[in-house]
Image (cartoon, rainbow, N blue to C red; front, top):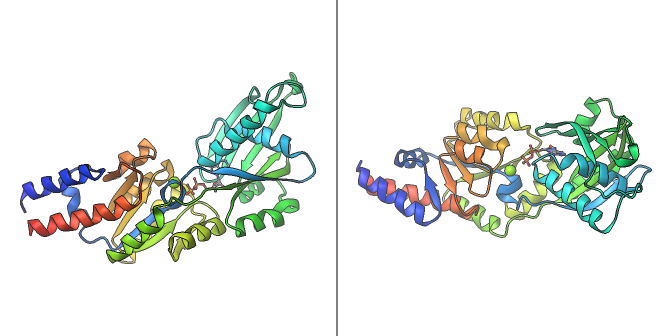
Length: 309
Ligand code: ADP
Ligand code: MG
């Protein structure tokens, strides 16, 4: 093997916006036959927007206000969308107490990866009172915390079946509403999946999101293998399982929740638009955050290796 050819390969990669950690990594792509794709931020834009607020018996504004206060402190795309929507409403309006939304105080904030967030929210009108313990997240997680989600479950499930991502909002022990979000797929994702298939690779969509949203995104880009509702800690296990079945796995992801899976895969590819943790765990960075670069990277490595032999 000539090191020169490897270096030429890495140099060409850099021109294409593909950063390779070391020339030896090209070797790892040789046997890859399966490409596991994270959904949120990799196949989709990762920019969610709030499209609907469901309520049990209170007001939609109140549900959004309390959820927004807690989500301000979180980093997930879901959190960004909810915080942005609640602050946007605040600029044209103020809460019932006359105090702008966004000035609420949050104590004891905690994010549970893949499950949701919790915090105690004190608005000006709650004065020196204890405030409300607000939870935003998956219904199953809320139920684990002793909250009965039955009153809203049917409407919630219908939005998910329709391809949306939704989270429930609860405080003081009862479910109060749900926030419905959408995250469109990137324009280039469909082409990228076609390119991967043309290289003989089998694409698999892997996500922590619900099965309805996962299937809707998969259908749009032409993927049939979908693994949904996987907790962040279990994404790497899914990769190991595929490897145990004999697959040689490349994984493409962008989130903190993808880092372990990126490191476990035979080849890890991080979106350059993603988190530092994912970039550090990966072998390769797709600087442009365009999924088509994943196919380009694999094509380039194969060509470079052919030159070497
Ligand atoms: P993905 O693999 O799509 O990036 P995650 O594993 O990060 O998904 O999240 C999975 C699910 O956990 C979300 O769909 C949501 O139900 C819940 N969740 C995660 N973070 C939050 C948050 N900040 N607020 C509310 N729910 C959240
Ligand atoms: Mg992601």
